[in-house]
Image (cartoon, rainbow, N blue to C red; front, side):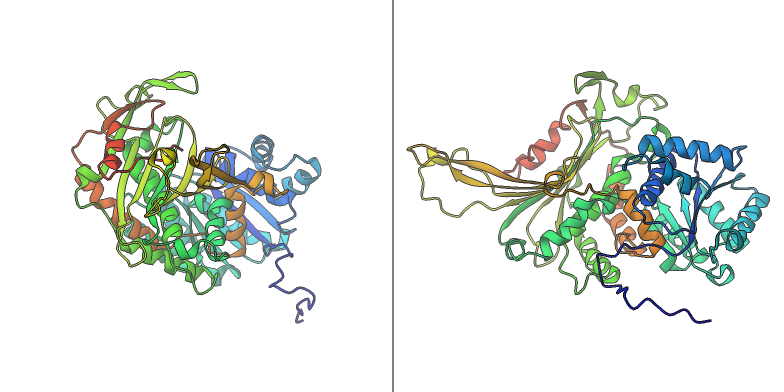
Length: 508
C-alpha cells in the first residue's frame, strides 16, 4: 500500500522541526567522557525538544559487564548532570525504555555478531527499518578494528540493512596527511563516502554558523571583506585549563594537531571563503576547500611561527602546574601547548593580508574569537594628539563563551575638544534571542540522523588542512618550544612575531 505524503507539510517551511526517521544511534566507547558529557545529554535534549522520532534507540557498546538496566542508570545520571534543557522525568520515561547495551571488546567477533542481530531485531521490536548511525567515540587507534568488524558483519551495508547506515568519526582525522588518507580509504571502503560524517564540533556552534549569515545575508560587510580594506585577521582559541587527564593523547599530538588542523582551519575557511551559489552542503564545502588549498604556510617557519609550553603559574587566582609537572608527561617532553602561526591566502581577495592563528592552554581565560582588523583611514584631519587613543576598526566574532559580535570604531569623546577614541557596539546572543542556543553536539547528532552534511568537513578538506600543518611539523621536529608562565598570553616570541609586522595581538 502506497503511503501518500502530507500535502500540508512543505519541506521548505522552516517553521516545521526536522525530525529523523525511526533509527538507532550506536555509540562505541559509551563509557568515555565524550559519551557521558556530550552525546547522552544531547540525546536527552533532543528528546526534550521533541526532535526525536518515537522509534529511536540508543545502543551502547563497551567492554563492561552491564545489562540494559545498568546502562540506563549511567545514562540517566549523565543526562541529569550535563543536559542543557531542564530535567523532566516524563521525557526520560520515554527515553529510558529505548536504551540498550551490548557488552564486548572490539576484537570480539561474537559481540559484534550480537550487535548486528540486535539491530536487525529493532525492526520488529521498535519499528526501525534498518536505519542506524555508528558513533566512534573511541581512540583513533581503534578505528580500523571497529570498521573492519562493521564491514565483516554487514552492519555498514545499506542494502543488507534495508535502511541507511552512517558512521560518525571524531577528530583527530589521522596524525598527518598520509595517515588521514589511509583512514579515509578505510572508512570509505566500509561505508559509502556520502554516509561518512566527520565531526568537528566547532562547526555545530551557533556563532560559527552565524558567520555565513553575517557575511552573505547582509550588504554591509561584503564590500569591505577583502584586501583593499582588511589589514589582518586574528583567530584565537585560548583555554585556561591544562591537559587534564589527556596526557597520553596530548603528548603524542600537541596543540597544532589537536585544534589548529581542524577547528581553526575550519574557522579560517568560513571567514575567507567566497559566497556559495546556494546553501547546500556541496557548495559550501567546495568554497571552503578552495580557501584551504590556497593557504600558504610560512616560508620562514622560524620567523612566522611560535611553539610554546606552559610553566607553573597562576590562573584565575589558583596556582597551577607546568606541563612537564603534569601526571604521565615524560620528563623533557617537547610537545607544544601553544602555537601561533602567520598564514597567507593566495587568491585575489586576500593577497597580502596576514592571517594570524593562535591556540594555547593555561592562558588567562577561555575564549575563541575571530577578529577582522581593518586598515586605518588613509588621512585623518584631526590633531595627532586627539587621535592617540584611536585604533583599527574591528569586527570581532566571539565563538565562545560569550557568543556574539562586537564592532569597534572611533567616536568623539563628549567635551569641547575633538578627541577621538574607540567604542564598541556589542551584540550578544543571550540578550538578543529568547531561545538558548543548542549545544554543538545536539545540533550535529540531529544532522547525522537527518542526513544533513552541511556542517561536516569532507575528506578533501581534512587532507588540505594537513597540507598546511605537515610542513610546520617537519620544520619543528627536533626543536624545543619556548616557555610561558601559566596565566600569560603565550611566549614573548608570539608578540615579537606580530611586532615585526608593526601589529599586536588583539586583547581577547
